[in-house]
Image 1 (cartoon, rainbow, N blue to C red):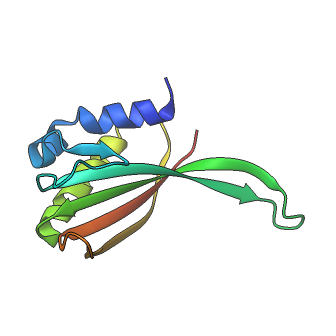
Image 2 (spheres, rainbow, N blue to C red):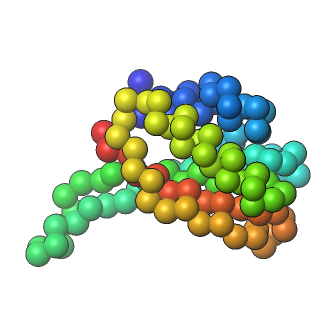
Length: 119
């Protein structure tokens, strides 16, 4: 199995997270007019370069978990459940950023949690 599959399985099987969002966890694309709250997950690659020569020496996967809900309190509860679910995996998980804002398109509260995975 890949780390992507393991992390996906961890969050989609988590009872606490399911109690908050049901099955509304999406990979990259979200259905049109989704029921709130929901989670969107996508991956970006982050190249690690050697400081002196500027050579690329490797890549570490970075995942962004976006939580959409009606209130900040709801985004925090869902974020906490996501963190707990991710920490049940065997991968070293590093929580790099956690930013809350109002989504310009939907008007919902949005929380973006950036996670680096060492594998």
